[in-house]
Length: 99
Image: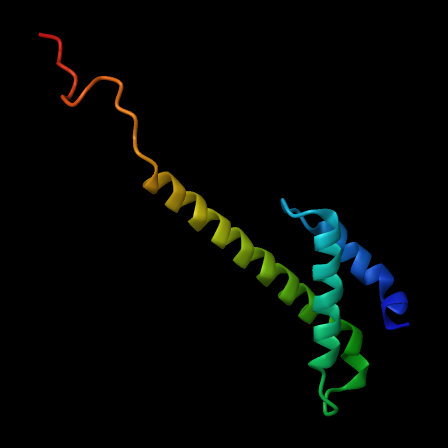
């Protein structure tokens, strides 16, 4: 029921996402972050800004997760490049300079 009520906010957030992840996984990330934001609400928080806090916390979690995923991918790619042997087609000696 809550997901239906906040569908416009969630779908707007989902359309803003740019990632190499499959669409279904991005949908799950948004829904999971939203439910975690609801769970993190305390009873002492003012009700007049509830929607704003839910939106901000959901966005923070989603973009934080995607940023972390992006950094891990970059690190993995950099490690793969550094571990792969370089191919030197000119042999073991540096190229000669023209005189």
